[in-house]
Length: 435
Ligand code: GDP
Ligand code: IMO
Ligand code: MG
Image: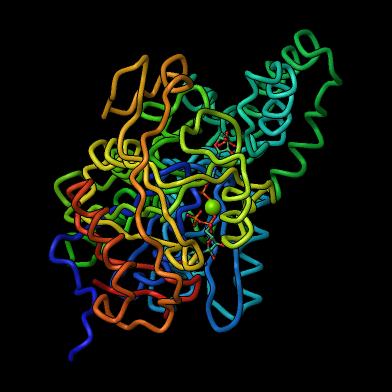
């Protein structure tokens, strides 16, 4: 029987989004798919993301560089919607080069992307420590929220400013003067030394210059020339600042709409929207999580799935797959096909539960409430499915998978009304079944 593969997409652009609370395995999927696309673009978030790629016996975590970088024919773009910490970026470029991959000439950075400065990280941590236990977001501490605050308040500093030392100095002096008022008067902490920051960041102009371009125009010209683009989301739909479990969210739009604003690729170029979904669920940081398991099953999911944050190393909270939340994410992002990941983590479970609806005040509900005051009160209703108690890691096709694993996938497809196209049964590139 001929092995099925993912064919080159007809429309120019595909968006790949996380459908849960992040860490669904987006990095693995983007790396796996990158040989089908000419360009991979990150469109939002920053170094809060940790996208893990396993290939040739190596495990690499990328925070800013798109996950197509380990495919030598693929061009990578950091779009205007990303917030860039220049130190983190330079470190990452060096890491990729040390692995034997060229970055210069293959990575382009939007001149319009905003920067993360040391005072953003400081404010991120001061803001978190000023909140009481229940209110803490549990951010990654990477300065994401404060940098987006400056962007939307229209006094942010952008990549293009790094290339003009005079402009950079002026903007840094203005920004730091304002931040120091906040840091000293509100948080009652020590001032930030403006001259040290100017000295440090002025030096980035030569380092970053070779990568900087108008990526919005570049992408549109490439699309016009017939090239294909994969837009790589960070985080997940339920962490979206507009559509997620606000305020326990990140400060950008991981949903597919964010792919257009964060890259300059217009919606009419987008054909497929791939939703990445773990076969169970995890969340790192605070916020509601109706199917969270605070028992030995949750502990087993975390242990078998190695659920520790790829950016902060924090233990991820674990629970059963939540179809109420998933259906919501699929609608908001217009997902056309699903990539189901980490199915192998369920290999040893005799019984697998899936949440199909919630109970709220004695009534069954099927719609996902995003507001904390409601979501914190729902009780999951579960359907129990038979485990397969076997490994599918050698399966080359869906038909070769254990019948109970097939039944699980088919149940999921029918319950959400979106086909599953990829099934990931291990972290490696080759541990992927195309259905
Ligand atoms: P991302 O942020 O969505 O890219 O996901 P992370 O990299 O933060 O977390 C996913 C973790 O699961 C990483 O350690 C991956 O190497 C791993 N992973 C991805 N797919 C699979 C899979 O199908 N099975 C197993 N066991 N691990 C996987
Ligand atoms: P990837 O791309 C999982 C979570 C944080 C916190 C909230 C806000 O690897 O899936 P932030 O630092 O963004 O202000 O934190 O969002 N968070 C993530 N959780 N995966 C991520 O990225 C995340 N990026 C941010 O834990 O709850
Ligand atoms: Mg991650």
